[in-house]
Amino acid sequence: MRHLLRDKPAGTIRITATDHTVDTVIWPKLTDFLPAYPDIKVEISVDYGLRDIVADRFDIGVRTGDQVAKDMIAVRIAPDLKMVIVGAPAYLAKQKTPKSPQDLLQHDCITLRLTSAGGLYVLSAPVYFGILFT
Image 1 (cartoon, helix red, strand yellow):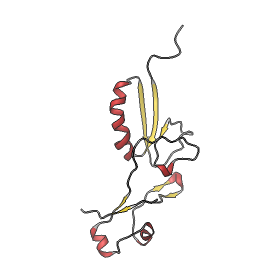
Image 2: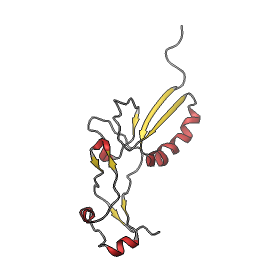
Image 3: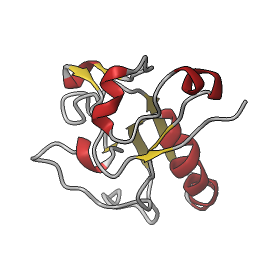
Image 4: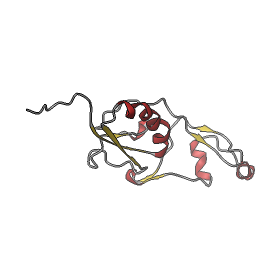
């Protein structure tokens, strides 16, 4: 009779995450994990759309703290990220430097549209302001 349980883990793990998370969190962890478990295959979907983890049959969905669905179980896999808002010196020389997120309403900004969230990404405090030097 064939054993129903294996001696070592095997199968496919499906992960959905943003490109930044894949590059900075997932890949570094997989470099040690995959050689240790050669019978495990990993499929990664890089996506800013915040896909429905359950409906799309993912095993893992990596989200920032404010993007975790209410019915999901969350486990921290990385330290907090600091968000930085930057502006080119030439632009800021012509405009008043923003001091708060509300000040950004008066500026030309490049924004991130999350289609599954129904609109633009909303900044949450704390947000750090800085100048991008080119």
